[in-house]
Image 1: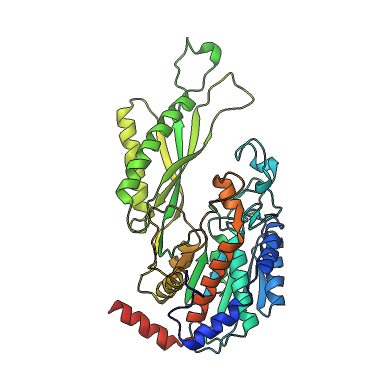
Image 2: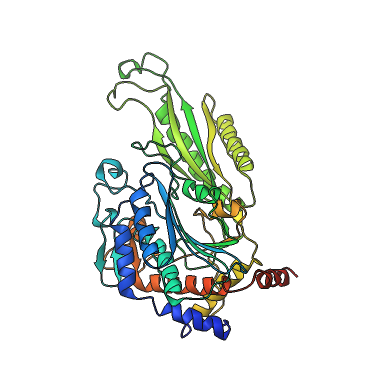
Length: 449
């Protein structure tokens, strides 16, 4: 890592970035992240956290607002206004947690019980903070807040507007059972932000991964229905027997192998799109004596930016057709129930060049591209609406006094990693919203040439 992570900036911008970086402190990062973790924000119930974020931004000199989607969901955003001669930049992070933090909704699917890190309560362990969403998404949101606060307090003279935006419904989920609004996830908050005019020339989304990502998978979901015969345990040996649940198991096993072949075919750029069978539903839990006539499986199939949802749908349907042909009597059909295309930002875009330069200045080496990614974020919403966007974030914590599994990776954040990400965001912002639009356009044209 270089001494200050500002190599490549001219003297003025270097000075402005240094002034802003002086306002970063471990104590302030601790205040920000614990404040976010301690306010529950499961998908569909982000309103209280959005209010907290807007109040915090307002106290640091930002024009800030809460943007309700309904009586429970809300976005938050803040703006530092430039003089109008430069490009506008959005630093974006979602704010909803993947799980709820309550046993009534999470157990037993998350495990036999809710661990400490699975609850919306922040706990400090030296350099680490644990609690529901402490890293993803809240640690990243705290870094966006810290970066904008530092730039505001430093009084950096801006040419373009710097927008900090925090979206509801960023997790890959549909409405929870207790929800009142069906479209509560899948980027609904980000879409609403843009529809309501919170728009910029470029965007950086803060989500996990210490690399500058310019492309990202999309996803399609399928509901797979497997047919069978409704019958009774006492008559299994006397009547036709075709258990839809057993048949669904055959379908799931077939698809799990097919997903591996699919991923190999569509790996390109930095993405390696995966697929999973995520849930199964069938029969009456109260009536173990009978079999159901149908069983349904839910499938998440990730798609690269190079294929459309319709192409993915046709590949999936062809796979099921091949299974039917090899399994006489199998009744299996599917319906695509969700589709979000994968997206890509040109690597010659200003924002990719600036974010990459910031990474290289902080690391003191050439940018390291991380390939094989299959995670989808609201970057697809931003790019899909026409805003060139890159993704940058923190790596998963590797050293901790406890085992890091998937959930703890989401729920554990390091102050050192937060400081590094915040410095990156500051440098990228100062490099962008202190220039003229003509200067940025000229740089992009030079990259294309």
